[in-house]
Length: 184
Length: 291
Figure 1 (cartoon, each protein chain N blue to C red):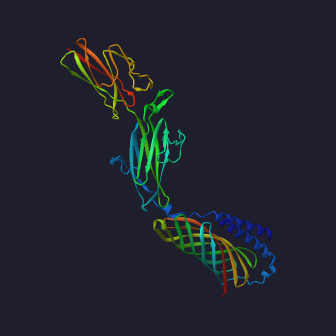
Figure 2 (tube, rainbow over the protein chains, first blue to last red; figure 1 turned 120 degrees about the vertical axis):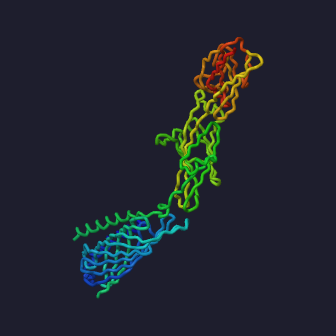
Figure 3 (spheres, rainbow over the protein chains, first blue to last red; figure 1 turned 30 degrees about the vertical axis):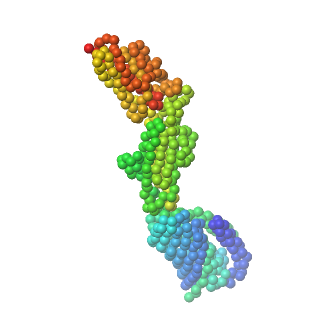
């Protein structure tokens, strides 16, 4: 199932890019989002390879056409064997960099940043619980589609490396997001 | 433009491929909990208590019980398994052709030895029985052999999370030990007549069934070996053929005899005995001087 989602994700990106080229004329009408002062705010949801779901908020502060501040807030749940996992909150401030935009409505980002959060592990079968802060870093990449100046869609893949609770782990996340672009 | 697009797409798909294979999280409590700790109490011997490795010596036909317990943080062990592997030099290849989990009560042959293993999960008792019922169990090519052997068993318990804890049980088949007869001489009213008594002294506590006496004779076969229902071990120790000359009392059940010597002076008394498995001892000798 996860593999299918990932493949659909990739296929969607691929198709959207080609469709975008054919509709370039329409896209040129979009107002450029990546200008200083623009502050996209949105929600995203996704899955990793082992979790149940991941939902969160996304905020950007655009410095210029290339660089913006990225702040993400995530909540994730998963089950591993007898252990139930809840990433209660994961705050990830970082920098997003636009490495390619073939059209004004399409951007390819890469991003990286730090992460700090709070994890909780429970195992009902042994009535045990472990919780505590986690910290680490994340990298990601994604496409941003901007059909209208006020709205954009993000398809994104991320990888987190987190430490805490006497453990360390890597986790991926593949998400679809929608953002409202505030222009001040 | 198209080239850039293709490159970008390839990079993007490549990144997806990389990150999609990297979720290292697993069952947290399974990974972090301590394994159940097994402790043994063998036949009430407190010296074994707490050992994760224990040696069980089994003689022919002997049964021993091994009491065990475990400690687990989560309080419960839900599953017991025992696995058997032959022992030796780190090579766990099984010459007897088995490497499966032992089923309780199943009989396993190993190196001419047979062991029965019972696992009582409720009482936490393992019972080991050497299934030898006769020396003929060890018959091979028409001769009786007394192989020793060793046998390693793992006791495996799992806690509620499935975390396994191991302990090693080393079964050492000590086989059958030969008796060590001891000769006692008692005087009678007649100075030339002596009572010869034999104490079998079997280290296994086996009953002594037969004795042979050779007085002032010559021993021709002085070896330990089996003689059961006409089957022998090598070298041959057949009763009635282990000595000649003198007075040779063969295969009697009498642990004492009265012998009338024909003259005063030095005399040599040789005795051997046979335990319940048919194992003849060495000849032992006692010299006496009759004035």
